[in-house]
Structures are given as C-alpha cells and as structure tokens.
Image (tube, rainbow, N blue to C red; front, side):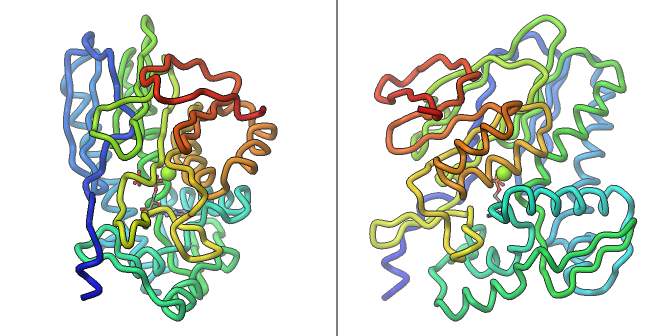
Length: 328
Ligand code: ADP
Ligand code: MG
C-alpha cells in the first residue's frame, strides 16, 4: 500500500529558537493561538499580559485562513472585499514582500498548502496535475489592495508565513506603550526580546534533532530572531523529506539542501518573511540578498555547515558543525 510507504515523522512544531536567560522576568502567560504555543514573559505586572492575550486571539481570529469567520477565509470565498485597516495593511505589506523576494515568498499558496496537507493527518505527494491546478490560484500579481478593499481576482491567500512575525511586532508595540522595559516574546520560535539591562541569549535548534538541542547561541537585544526549518513539519517517503515550505515555481517543498534559516532584525514580520523566502531562494541568492539588505543578519544551516553573515556573532555549541562566512 502506498500509504504504508509514508513514515510520518513529525507534525509537532519544534521550537526553532530557544530562549536561554529568562530568570529575571516575574510575569508570564502562555497562549495557544495560530496553531502555536506562545509564551510571553515580562518584567512588570501580570495585568498587561491579559491585554497581550486578547491581542493574540484577535490576530488569530482575523487572519486564520481556516476559520470561517476570519477576514482571510471570507476573502478567499469571495464573500467580502472590504476589510478593516489592519487586515488590509498586512495583506498590502505581505504582497509588497512577495514582489520584493521575487515571489519566493508568496502569500497565494493556500491551495498548494491544502493539497500537500502537511498540517493534516494524511499528507501525501500530489500528482503533477493536482499541483498544476493548485498553482492556478497562486498568482499574487492578481491581488489588488486599495485602501480597505482587497481584490483577490482568483488568488487564494494564506498568511501563515508572516502572521506570527506580525503578531510578535504587535505584542512588542503594545508592551512598550504600556511602559514594559523588559520582555521575551516567544511565538513558537518567532522570538523577540528586549531589555534595558541585559542582552538575551537565544539558541538555534539543531535540525532533525531533539527539541532543545542547539547548534549555536547568539546574544540579542531589541531584535527579532526567527527561524524557518524544513524539520518543523514534514513527512518522509522513500527516504526523501517533504516539508512545509514550498517553492512556488515547482509546487514542491523547496529542495536545495538548506535545513533551516534564522533571520535577525528589527521587524519580526520581515524576519518571518525573509526566513521563509531565503529558505526557498537557496544559498547563492541569499548571499545577494545580504548585499542588498545588510541590516539583517542570518544563519543558514545546510549539510553540517553554519553559513553566517559577517555581522552575526555566534557561540558554537555543537562542534560537529563547521562555521563559514556566507560571503566567502
Ligand atoms: P512556521 O509557520 O512553521 O513557523 P514559516 O514561518 O517558515 O514556518 O512559515 C511556513 C508557512 O508559510 C507554511 O506553513 C505555509 O503556511 C506558508 N508557506 C509555505 N511556503 C511558503 C512560501 N514559499 N511563501 C510564503 N508562505 C509560505
Ligand atoms: Mg517564516
């Protein structure tokens, strides 16, 4: 039986960025939203975290393409065109990033994602015909956003590659407005941390290893650290891994020996998008990307090597890995 060939390894999201020194924070909340366990820790009063929790549920409610009450679901169904300002602005921004990444990041892969069903119980390799059909709704250039009106013109969208990053930025903005001076926001591996007196050490998950095994650590402050990994959701068939980050050209999971990409920068939404896009682009294009975007540091893990940008300082933990400068 075909199904028996499929060995399902993991559908549980493994945290790809692990926060180390969080001893100084007195209040915390755990929220389950966006298919993710989220932890927010602050130095400050627990009350603020009630607002954070509400904010995260609200974002999930608005942007979840699989909730029939969400704006994204209704847009995909053709049931509405007008959306609130925050929804329109995130779609507009994500669309701009589709162009900016030459379509390697593509918000119109909803049907392809459904077809592969990597979040479901029976993922499988689709036929070429099925992939061709799913790609018919993947042309993001058909999407038009004008003020609060979104016209999809046949494209079907899913903001799964950006919404957690966006949510982290929203949480940071809320906490800073409330006067919180120290916080660690961990939205399932989309980490943002800031502090007025400490750098925060984060560990980068070793691909296909036990949760918590890290390859290296890095110290950051007031920055997002976001990883995308092929080891996060995948199935294996006939010795090959089929994971949840798609090459929009082929309709298959990206296939370039990159196991994970971690991006560090000021905007968590952008880091989230770039970590997905760089994973699809591959190493050579990632190099070009760095030359054009030196404000982002990143780390690519591929076949036992950590390729890092020159501005990124890491502390190697797993000496089985070699460290290379991506520009060399
Ligand atoms: P995770 O959501 O597991 O943390 P990512 O941030 O890398 O990982 O986002 C992966 C999600 O983004 C997929 O589950 C899917 O919803 C969506 N996606 C997959 N491939 C692409 C792509 N090329 N461009 C944009 N979104 C993508
Ligand atoms: Mg991402």
